[in-house]
Structure formats: C-alpha cells, structure tokens
Image 1 (tube, one colour):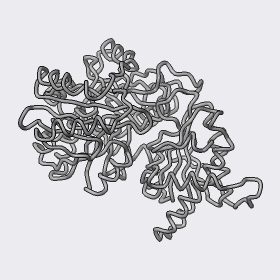
Image 2: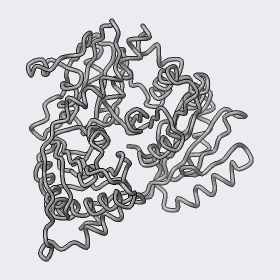
Image 3: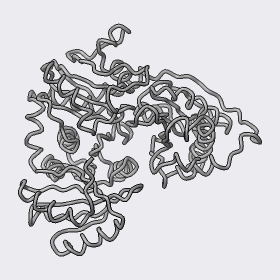
Length: 475
C-alpha cells in the first residue's frame, strides 16, 4: 500500500483508498524517525530539533489525516507544533523561524478534492524527495508495527504564527504611494485563507486584519470550507484561468493572480487578460531583484525562454540553468548562493526566504515591480516575450531512450548538447533555435519544449523533430 502513495517528490493518493489514517500514522512515524535522525546526524543541538512542524490544507480529509500523522510522529517520540490551516510556504517559514527538525504539510497541491498527501521538509526547509530522504521514510514506515510498538512520549502544541509570517512576507512588498487594483483567484484553496491575512481584503476587514494601503483585491473562489472547486486548482491549465481573465478585464484591474490548491504556486494575468509565462515572469523579477543585488546568481528552469538568460546577463547577474523540480532548484539556489529562482511550474524561490518557494512572496514582488515601474503589466512583459515558443508538448513512445539517441545522432554536429535534464540541443547562436526533450518518470512519454528566433524557424524545427518522438498527445 505504501508503494502506491510514495512518489518522486512527495506522498500522494486518493482518500481513503489507498491513502488513509493507518498509512498516515505509519508515515508520521517514518517522518519522525528520519527527520530527528537527520538532525542528530548533522550535529544539531538546538532543543527545538525534537520538534516537527505540521500544517494542513482545506480538503475534507486533511483534519483526519493530519491527526493520524501527528499521532505517528508522537508515537515515535517526536514533538509536533501544529499550525492548523496554512499554505505550504508557511511550513518552510515555520521550520526556519522556529529552528525545527523539519515539517510536514498535509496537501495534494493542485490535485482534485478526492486526493490528499504529504509534503516533507527537513532542517532549514530543505526538500525531501526520493533520493533525499523519502525512500528512508518509506522504509521506516513499512517496518513499524502499531500493535507491538511501545508509544513514545511526543507532545503536541498548537501555535499561531500568522503575525510573524505576515511580517515576513510583507517585507517583500513595497507599493510606495501607488494604488493598485488586482483580482485574485484562490481556486477554493489555501489562498482563500492566506491572501486575506497577508494582503488584506474585504474578508480580512471584517476580521480586523489591516489591509495593505493602496491595494484593492477583488476576490474569486475564496470559499474553502466545502471541499468544492469552481475549477481544478491548477493555474498551469489555461482553462482554469478563464474566470480570472474575464474578471480582470471586467474590473479594469491592473493584473490577476491565480494560486494552486496549497498556494505555493501562482500564475499572473496581465491587465488585458493575457496569461504571463512563468519564464517571462522569472526574467522580470530577476531584473528587479538584481537591481538591489547586482552580480548575484539567478537560477532558472532549463525549459525557459532564452530571454531569461539574456535579461539576467543584461542586468549584471549570473544566469544558472537548473533541473526541473523543487529538489533540484533549491539545491542550485544553495550551491550558487542565488538571490532568486523561477520554474515554468509557477514555483518562485527567494534567497531571503531560506531558498524556499512562496506564492505569497512572488505576488508581493510582482506588485512591487508594477508599482515602481509606473507601467502596465503587458508593457513590462512584451519586450521579454520576444521569441516564439512551443510550450510543453507530450509524445507517447515506448522506447524513450532510442528516440533520444536518434536526436543526439541527428543533431550532434549542429549545436551544443547537454544532459542536465533530458537532452538539450542548442543551435540558437548559429541557426536560431533550441529544444529540450525530457522523459516522464512514470509514463511512456517524452516532453518537448522548443523555441526559435521566429515563428517560421520554430515550425520547421517542430516538423523535423516531432516525428522522431512518437505520437503527439492532444491534451
């Protein structure tokens, strides 16, 4: 059963089958054994290193799974600081703010309501994936027997960290005297709790929460107590942004923001209702942050437009291509002491947020940029969105390795090739195009991203490369 819910980067499955309270208890025990052991092995002596932070999202199954998880942690001997209903990024903040051994967020992120799961972080909110601790947690969970176990004496403490968290996120926000009107789509997820508390809104005013001066927020899908979603809580799917796009235009707003279910990812819509690519947003935020810290490194998803690298260099920064996935992005942030990082998935990472990603801080930075520039969002993005892109195209193929080998043989003498993540063939300097092809870890799929200096070249590249990758998946 455990094998069905442990994934490459987290634990996830439908509730109550296969993910249920019994598994949650086992996973809690495994998390405690791994996280406390990791802290001890690292020589950590802080008394808080016996504590694990736990939070949960708004799903109807989250309270029961969180309770069982906490029992498992306690039965191993770990103490729990229970934050209650929070966004995932608050877990990263809490682990560092309280100097704990790690944290667990009960969430299924952007998945439909019948799903749930656990995102695990260790000391300093470093990510726990298959190769960085998740396999150990699975092993510990599989070996524990609740019937013969002598329970430990772990404690549970409820803690409200919202005041400290609000102060932290608002330190990234500077509107000056500018007045902005924005539309926020909370996707019936945790942004419906987080946005009112941090940025203020009509809902927040009734609770006595001080709004950000000059900021007006129009709320969409903030209700998050009924386990119902107006749309799938995944802002990367264009169909899920239609309501937001229409509202931005109708309200004559300065921009729109759509969050995923646990509010650690966001996508921006400009004042005309156009979706802003997350790589274009990475370039924009990088320029802004490098103006405050010239010469710093910026990590970016290797699938991003060439304009990201060009804009970072033009701003005096050091561009660092990163592998796809938060485990790799956070590791690259640390290795290069980067000030900022961005992924096509809508995850944005900040050095001054412990190298962790935050949807709330990404929103704060974008609002600050807009206020400082005196321009429209579309005007800021237009010069960055200068190259035609394919977007990610999936192909079904059984022999993925053979297809990649054929690509390497066909294009080997035409440009630079690297294997940082899948295969990247870069002929941009000479012929004005590049491609990246990555293998799916779980399906017989290849994922293609391509870009060129002009539309004609892009179409030529796609017509040449696509037949080598199998059958195109239409959705």
